[in-house]
Amino acid sequence: MINLEKITGLVHLYLQEVVQAGDVAVDATAGNGNDTLFLAHRVGENGKVYAFDIQEQALKITEQKLKEAGVAERAVFILDSHEKVLEYVRVPIKAAVFNLGYLPGGDKSIVTKPSTTITGLAECYKLLLPGGIITVTVYVGHAGGEEERMVIEEFSQRIPDREGYVIKHEFLNRPQTYPKLYIIGKRRSTVENSPSEKNS
Image (cartoon, rainbow, N blue to C red; front, side, top):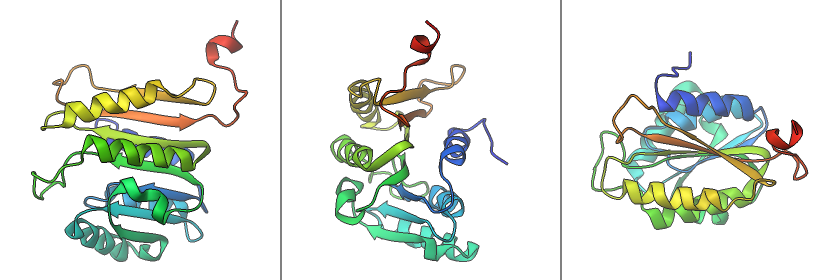
């Protein structure tokens, strides 16, 4: 059951609505493997998940988690930065997941960087199919987190409305340092109108 009291629950709720059997998805920050596992279940036997992480420890944890679930063959585990996604993924994708910050339970000095994050995000957006989404969870409570939030918002604001959309989620009754979630999607058709245009 999806827990909507947590950002991760919202991420999985969105992915559940978009990712179907046979799709290709990217987990740009494999971490402890929870998102990779969720995506592997969604894409099914004929789909594929490309899981990136710069820490070997994270990929080992992720691969083991998928093996225990019997779905490891649905994933490709890549020990490299997500900014190099186009070197490994050469097909259109239905979704990408970015869970920024540091590896939970790992070395907190190793964190995602605004420069590589925005490059990886832009490359995933190029690969994104119409109707696909990118989820970006930003942790602003650590050094560099606020800078990442700013570059993500700047990137998002440059997406033309007729091409895509961006949704921001935040909990208003929690500290400002609580994670924020961005959903970046491509419209199914570039001729779709916004809700305000449809109702006018």
